[in-house]
Structures are given as C-alpha cells and as structure tokens.
Length: 509
Image (tube, rainbow, N blue to C red; front, side, top):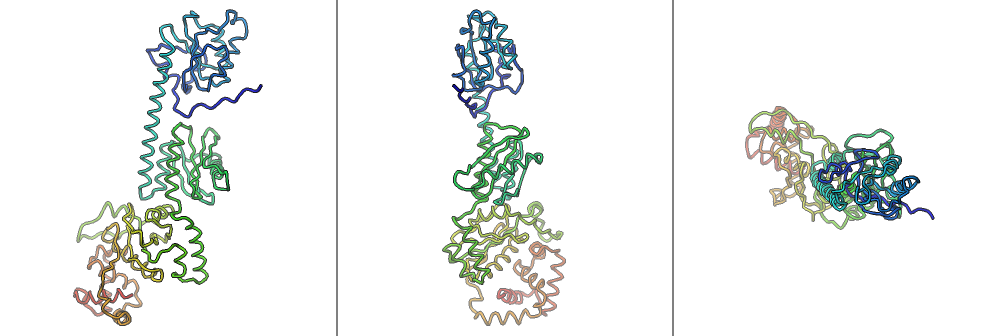
C-alpha cells in the first residue's frame, strides 16, 4: 500500500537544536549527523517502537532507550531501516538514552545516522526523557512568546503607519522593515504602483507580479492569498478586495509573517477601497452623462440621494511651514509650492473624509463630501471647506473652497470653513450688487493676478507675509501688486471704508 503523505510541521516557532544542546542541566551531546546551526525541532516524542513512522508528525526530537533493538541488530540492516524510517517521517533528530538498556550508543546506529544525515544526541543516564521534553516545551514557549511579541509590535507599527499623512507608502515601508524583505502594491490593472524595502532581482520581481495575478478576482474560487518560492526567496500575494493586490518577497518565512502581512492587507484594503457600494459604477454613469451634455443637478442623484455637498480643497502641509513658521512682522523668503500628492495619498484623504469623489489637480486635491458628513481636520493636510451647496452651485462652492484654503494656508490653520452667517450682500439685490462690483473693479478687469492678490490681502487683514504664503510669492511682490491696485483704482487702501467696499465688490464675483 502507498505510504501516507507526511503532514507539514506545525506553523509555530521552532527551537534550534543547538539551544537544547546548550542546556547545561541536560548534559546532552551530539555524536552523529550534521551539526548545522539552522537545524530546528518542533516537539519531543518518546517511542520504543521498531518502526516509529506511523506515530511521527514531522519535526520531532524522537527519544528512545533502545528497548526495541534486537540482540543481533548490529550485524544486519536493522539500524539503517530504523533511521531511514525516521527520516522519511520527517523526524528532526534522534535522542538515545544511555541506560538502563544500553551502556553506550550502538556504533551501527551512529553510522546509520551519519549515512542518513540525522542528528544523533546522546542522553546521559542522569537525564530523564521527561526533563528533555520539558526543556523543549520551555524553549518552544519562549519562542512562541517572542513571536507573539513580534507580531503585536508589528501590528502596532502598521496601525501607526496607516495614520500618517502618506498612509499607503508608510504601511508598505513598515511591512518591508518588519519582514526584512520587499513589498509591492499592484493596481487593478496589474501594474506595480508602489513598493518599499530591498528590491529583489528581476526574476524574483517578475515571479511576484505573476503571483499577484493569481489572487486577482477572476470569478468563483479565486484564492485570497497565494505563496511561492523561487531563487531562495519566499513570495506571498494577498488580494485586497478592491482590485488591488499586495505582494511580499522575503528571504525566509517566519510563523508570524502571514499574520503581519494579513494585517497590512486589511489596512491597505481600507485605504484603497471604495467607501460606498456601487460607487464606481455610479461615478462612471455620472461621467458619461456629463460628457453627453448633462447638468450637475441632473447628474448628482446618480451619486446618491444627496441634496447638498461640501466642496473641500486640500493641500499637503509643507514641512518648512511646520518647522519654520516665522515671526510676526519679519520678512521671509517666498514659500515653495507643496509637492503634488500622489493618487494613493489623495485616495486615502477621500477615504478619511468619507467620500470616493476625489480629483487631484496639481498640488490641490478636490473632494466632494455629502453634507451629512462634516469634514474634520486630517493629519498632514490643510483643508478649505465650502458651505453646503446644492449641485447647481458646486462651481461657486469650489471657488469659495479655494479661497478658504488659501486663507487656511496663510494662517496655518489645519481646516477653515467658509462662513454661512447672513452677510451685507443679503441686504442688496443681487443684480445691483453685481453691477456695482463690475463698475468699481473695472480698472482691474484685465489684471486677474492683481484682483486675486487684492482679494487675498483684504481677507488676511492686510498682512504682507500671510498673503505671500497664500499666493506662493515673495512679500515684495505682494507690496508691488497692492500698490498697483491702489493706483489703478485711485483709492486709499489704508482707509477701512474703502477696504470694506472693495471686499463687498470682490465677494460678488
């Protein structure tokens, strides 16, 4: 009859055989077989059966006193058969107890262990098998505790990485560091869109890309994870449930690595996933209708039963803004533009705000948020939020969000909202207010940069430095533009009445 397949060793931390041999209280001594430091054992088992194969799971230190050995065993093939069966069962090592049956370890057994590369350990008379088994259990418990601590620390660091301003790259970097390998995120089209860690050779990288395709949804029965080994590298891929896939390449595979990678996969799923069921199809339908001539108010119902929206404009916080806020009344060099956020960072921001409706344009991320979800400050971002507007006024809301963001950046506020309280404009008929604004601001009509500078400067109470920050220009440029505005308008801009009238006019645009 065919032999049953040897079951795999348990997915728990193993104990180096060298650690057991180092226990002085046991006085164990290896007398045959390879002395490789990487040799490990998963358990200790005692058996006096002539054929222990049926009782071994693999990875054990098998302990025997040689009760089963016949008197004429040394002249035949008994020891070769015995040792070969232990090796076939996956036994990790053999421990032979000296006394009470044998005074020494049989030479034929030593030779057989050398032949089949099975470590042979001599157990002295004063050492009980139960003491050896207890020592193995203690070492296993220590290894298991250390592995649980490693997994817990990794989970905490991954959670902290997910809360960073760049959550997806941070999670990938932390996972690569914890597993000592390379991690990659593959998009819905199968392309590699982010990676971290020590980059492997091209063949390994290609194999991992192919493995990621195995877990990509393709119908019923698609696995959620897959593993492979190539060129001495262990590969693993995890489906994120959003069309994305996570790939991991490591030199070795520790018992807790799968748990750590699974935690990272869950976090990445949340960071890259859709926030509303069916939102992808709804957005596609809305886009098609807009391209075919639909109006915002006709398209908005496709995105959900939302009557009003917040328009959010966001930009990543500049490190120099954090580290060097400057002093009041002192000159500062012109600020640099923030780095454009990548698609993953923009997606993560939308997820944090509770909306998949995002658009990354240059260094600004625009997000449409349903009015029942009030935007909150987000780490690493500066936000300007419009008042709640119906679909037909989204364009006006976007303009107000942009101006609010400029003010938030200048005042270094993490989030500012456009005011919604009754204004002076409510007392004047709309058409008359717009006509008055066109007449008053006519000298600036052909100078949009001057108009925007005047609006920002007035909104920031005449602060040269904050206006320079908001517009990303030098403070001297602001002074020159404001002086030019005063000349074209023929107005004294230090007069509060003049400022009030100009601000009223600018708000009609």
